[in-house]
Structures are given as structure tokens and as C-alpha cells.
Length: 465
Image 1 (cartoon, rainbow, N blue to C red):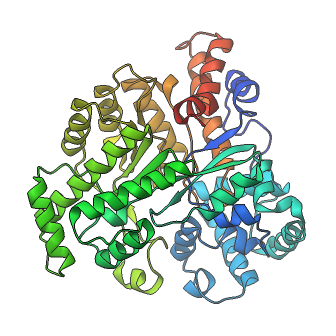
Image 2: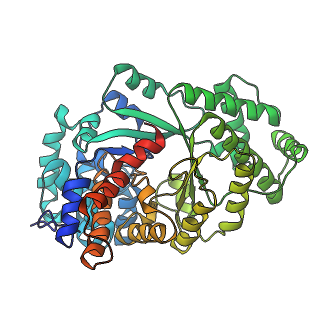
């Protein structure tokens, strides 16, 4: 028995079904932001078993297992992979109404043709069935992407990365395009432990001894150019909020000098430094014609005990309630007033700020580029049915959803691409229900074009892939 009883899943009327199957389903996927391993893609890795492919590194699943009372040894610990899978299978029936329930069964169905509901009793049978498939080249990383019709995948790398895997794949002339986004947050967060060590590492990568603030800017510019020369046209930042404190260059130079000497930096000084570096980076992105992305609003590493034990990105983050609008407006306005505002995507993690973000983008869409400033797809805790619908409604009400660049996975899992299907079904249902209610015209050709644009064409044009 499957909860996906037929192809009408999430499509509640004939209009929605027609929009999905005629205009959305077969569109290629441009996944313009994710955290997949470029090494796994370049080497075309074949995973040893389903646990390694599906559970390792997936903090969504880990949080669900912990909530059910599963011991950590079956999550991130040293339990055998089969036992970890059994623990996940035991958890799945308890994830009803969590997006994990939908994602789990969509992924089993789309990749492996398994329509059964996963639970403790059939865990071993499904584990063995999938593991047999994984032994074949058909289920290598690149072929998993090909199954989902992925045309472009954009990973996320630190400025110090060599990009060797991206260069390797590009040199092979593969149909799949793998690019990357430049993620320089470690060079911005001056109060973080290890900042000075990171400066040394960044300097080594850039071939510059970073002793002054100008050295730092030179190193960042060299690394941006290196990424650019290797095909990158996208940056990404994961910040609590945008930094736009007033500062002078003299102040920032002094703050950096003191930090490099091991002296303390106050919170106010840190904000000035962060604002200066972020503004410099955004200017540089604009000069090179890049797209800049800002993922805003995560409250990270809340559980200090578990963070010390397991490290970051292991499931201890949540939605923050940081004030967003004033600093964001000031930051975008300063860039715009100097004609240095790049194409920009704003991702919001707190649904209370959906309308703030959706209305903010209209302040800086200047007619130079279609959808120049984007309210990005519902992110992280919000990339589920309710969150995605609310994001699309806010964007529709405050701006033009027809200009939207659509969905991305933001995932570390090679089995996460049915999330694009999930998004496309919700998108088509949203329009289909309004057609049925008489709120939109029964012009399937025109609305179908809008659907196709949101699913694929807008991203293709916006990112120039």
C-alpha cells in the first residue's frame, strides 16, 4: 500500500493535473543551491548501502529520530548501517504530517520503484532490495541525478576550495553541469573562534600573507576571480540578518589589526567589520555580474552540549526571530544608490517575515533585469507544503510570482530531488484551484507558460546557465 494512490497526489482537480503533467512534470531541474559533495559527483560514487546514501548527513531525519527517542548511536553513532536503517524505518510511521513522511515515500517510489509504506517490519526487505540496486552503475551519483532530469547542480564551497572536482567534471564534457556558489562567511564572522586561523588558510589559498584589512580584501577578490575563472557566477551567505552598520575604513582597519594581534573585539566593532566586508563582497559580485544569495534567519548551534560533541550542521538549529527589514533596506539601498546591486535572492526562514521580504524586493526591482531581486523559495524548516504555499502566496500578493526562479533542494542528499516534484505539484495545485473557483481564467496555454517559466525557464535565464 502506498500513500501516493495515483498520480493525483497533491493535485486536487483536473486543472491542476493538466498544468502539472502538460507543463511542469517534464521540465529539467536547475538546482541552483545545494550542499551535495562535488567529489562524489566528479568520481561518480556508488554508495555501499541505503544508509550511507539516504540517512548519513541528513539532519532532517536525525531530528525526527531523536524526537522519537532513538539513541544517538543509531543516528550519528557507531551502530551498523543496517541497524541505523531499521531505526529510521521505525521512525517513519510516526512522521505523519511532517514533510519527512511525504519525502520518504516519494524518494523510495521515484528512485527505486518501491510503493510500500516504510516501517519496522519491512525495513530489512526494503534495505536489501535497494542495496542490490545500488551495486549497479545505474545508481551511481550522476545516474541518480540523471533519473531526476537534473540539468544543473550548484554546490556550495568555501573560498579556500580548490574546485578540483568541478574542474574535473567540466573537463569531461558531461551533459550534467556542476557549478558552485562562493560561501565566504568564515571571512566575515570576526568574532568566531578560529577566525585568525582561517585568515592564514585563506591567505595560503590566495597566495597572500593576510596581515592587514587591505590584504584580506585582496585575498577575497583573488578567490572570487578564481571561482569566476572556474565557471562560478553565484555567491551565497548564511547569516542571522544582513549587516549594514555605519563604519569608516579607518575603523575597520583598526578592528582587523587588533583581531590579528589576538586582542578582543566588541560586538559593536564586529558589526562594523562584518558590514564592511559584506558590502565589499557585494560590490565585487556586481562588478562580475554574479547572483548573490542571502539565507537569513537561522538560529544556529542552540544545543551547546551536542554541538560540542557532534559539531555544526548535525540538527541543532532552529528558526530565529531576528529583526530584518531596516538593515536589509539600508544594505540594498546603499548598493543600489552606487549602481552596485547585483541580482539578489533573499531566503527567509521566519514565516512572520514573508510579507516583509516579498514587499522588500519591489523596492529594488528597477526594470534592468526581469525579477532582479527575488524572494527565494521557502527554505529549510519552511520547504514543506504549508511553508511553500505561504511563500508563494506572499510573493503573489506583493510581487509577480510569474518572475519567480522556483525551487532548489538546499540538500546534502542525492535522493532529495523529488522535492522539486513536490514543489511543482503544489504550484500547479495553487493555480488549478483558483482556475476552478473562477479567480483565474481558464487559459491553460498562458498559465501553463507561467508554470513552465517558474519550474525551469526563469532560472535558466536568471542564472544564465
